[in-house]
Length: 287
Image (cartoon, rainbow, N blue to C red; front, side, top):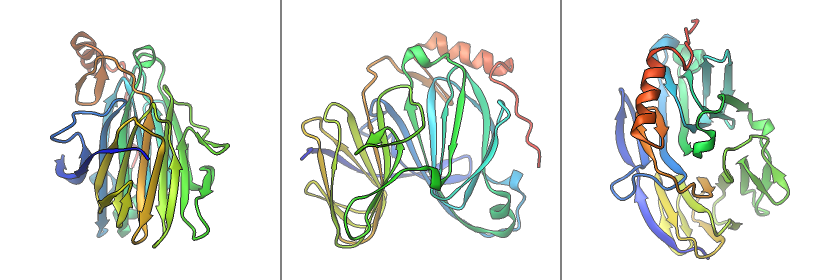
């Protein structure tokens, strides 16, 4: 069994008026290579708003992959490449932003106007230097396009977001070796997962009560594992939802500033200049 190196409860963070749970970065880790950030946003909207009043408006990115998994509600993505898509609960929006893209991410018009539960997790994955200036790519997947594996006879499931597991795979191309999945367990279930012992592996538990490799885990909690074995055993005391991130460390210098993640201060200054000059595209939202 992999040794649990640390257990961290998520912090409450105000992101431009949106209150999120942030397990990474935290007081112990600035990042866990190749994973840079994990944001968990859960909110019940009351309705009576315009879509342009909710979510995050147009902003640029360069140098990494921001990934958003939708757990409840629907997320509307627009970008400077011309993509305009709504992904519903169970789906994912994956971007390899490369040299630059401008996008917005908002709860759907229906949720803004009529209300409803909305829950997403967005995490950032660093890109190797050789991919940081490639053309941007956007990949939306709905729930029915994501491979699901039954983990036991009780109904616990694993959904493959990136990479492969037991001959099942995701169609999303990644910039480095990764395995990303969501896990839904049922009460009193016991499941075992195999992970690559050479990869940085992190688990974030959205909710529920479990014992994971000997540690009692509650909701909104992140586990960081040592690279000493491959197996992860999850014993669920109640139905639980988890996010598994496992990836090969890139082991390169990281310099970041807001929405840009590069390898040097000079590259960050170039990114700021290029964004200001419109070289990462322009997005004018149509409401």
